[in-house]
Amino acid sequence: MKTWSRLLIGIALVAALLTFTAYTEPASAQGEIKVGAVQPITGRFAFAGVHINAGLEDALAMANEEGGIGGKKIKYIMEDGTYNTDVAVAAFKRIMTRDNPIIMYGESTGLGKAMASEIKDRYKILYSSTSFSGELADPAGNPYVFVPGPTYGDMFGILLKYIAKEKPGANVAFFYSDTEFGKDPVPYGREMCKKLGLNLVSEEVAKVGAVDIASQVLNLKRQKAEYVIFQGFVLSPVAEIIKQAKDYGLKTKFMGTHWGTHKMLLDKLGPLAEGYMGVMPYSFWWEEDRPIIKKIRAWNEKHHPDVKYRPTSYMQGFFTGQVFVEALKAADKTGDLTGGGLVKALQAIKNADSGGMMCQNYSVIGNKIPYGRVFKANVSKGIFEPVSGCMEIN
Image (cartoon, rainbow, N blue to C red):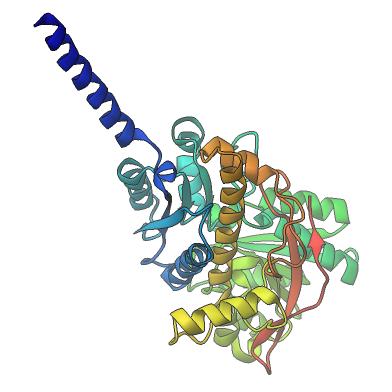
């Protein structure tokens, strides 16, 4: 009788252990890989957020259609962060608790910085986002985080190198928003101006969507700024600044980083876009000679037949998905589908072919992919055209 009781207890313990193991086992080991995301689907950057989300989702769905990760399908889980850090943090933690993904994507610089310590010490997952923050790309401080392109500082560096070549010793001004997004590359930009022999004559700050920017524009005139680099704005108040500068007779050349180099801005500026330049790490929808753009166009024609155009925000999300898939495939081959395994796989990416999404085959250097081209607005066509080759800042 005692033997029978011991046997029953043993069976019960084994069953409990198996149940616990099944519950805690990573989803990737069960034939499904979960990728979570907090996207700015509503809020002040929703016009970009819906396209970022679509790009990332399409890249992962495309990978699934092509066989997944060693036969395992990727499950994409998304919640709206509204471009509000408190809302986004809550959504991030909710996804982690409920779904336990091994990769997360975030909606902003603010969210990345708010979650940085927990990503490193608690969650230990691969993380990327809409942000090109230099702080987030630091492998020592944020080993699980990568920037899917050049940092904002790198973008400043590319533009400043272009300026220094075009007009040595030029008067340069920075015009940025009073946000983490806006302030991020400014210290590096100051250093680069000194290094390149450029005169940083002014730093102007405004709120996103500001209406009254007359004093800042007048200061640009007083300081005789010949080039102005925007940072931390997507649309407003860029058009207003350029219009007032023209009204005051400024001959300034205006430039933007990734989030300020898109067709929506050209459409809003109209003739004011003449001479506007920006830096872009990815290909545009109209660069149909690139294999990945052909593939994206065919995919959208099949799966999103009503879509006739995809903006740069879509390309950012799509390329991030490409890198996720590259890292997942490498980690899967080593049998280490964990955050740590993904970081090792990410750091090992060298000379990878993005199908022309990047301006050259890309390598992950540190925790970033530091390549970009300078583009100039073609007002008559309503598009950006390259005026530089592929540039690297490291």
